Image (cartoon, rainbow over all chains, first blue to last red; front, side):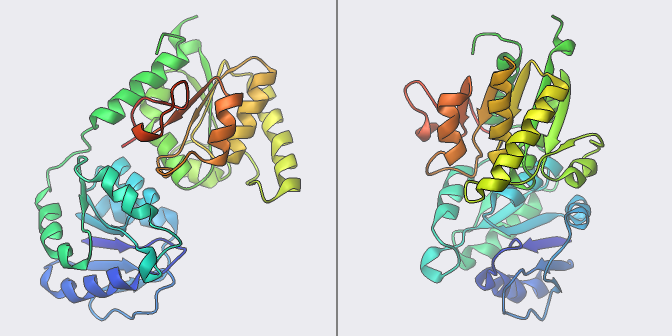
Length: 160
Length: 152
């Protein structure tokens, strides 16, 4: 199963419509959390909102998350060790107030389990890559190891 | 003092701030750890039944912020931690301020969502916390904020 999510605050019809077009070819159920979007998908199970507990239960069962580049969803995927494909919202399309999601994807492209589609044309190949990561486990990145080590050093009053 | 007996209060608001704290949990769990959050239901979902509740607040809500400051002080006095760590947002900053009053060592880890500039509380933490860390290397300053990696 694939979960598509755009967060609770804003719609992201460009992502939802593109995933709706791809859904029939994906050979697995697709559940879309559409937020305040106006596009009405035909090929996915649609939910405007999903409560956090249920969302986590779905994440636990899914093979791939497809999401706007919201940091909360990226963090949830990391905690459950699930691959995530993110597509950034763009301010010039009225999808967000600013382009901070572009900065987010720049930073996280290439981290274990994180894939980036710059726009809807890149979704199909990245989905294939994401699903091929099936045995990917939440390998801790080198930056995460560094932060954990620094945190332990601070707590134990050791030199940083 | 043995490792396990270092008392740590870890604070994060609901949402992405809390997610980041949970990613740090494997390290935090080595100590005598207590949690505080604006959404105890979210903490319960992670198996943390006794997280202290802090009222949500931000700089646009002065009265609520004052209340939050008082609750933060009460939580800090209740636990008397050796160390306070927060991944944001404002309620965590208030706990850090309260921590200074009781002599705790305090660490602000600015959210990984802040890739363009430090959050407002992050900027304040440069002055008021013992350590202020950014999760973005290009935002690190000469003295602070410092960069030691990111949760991801």
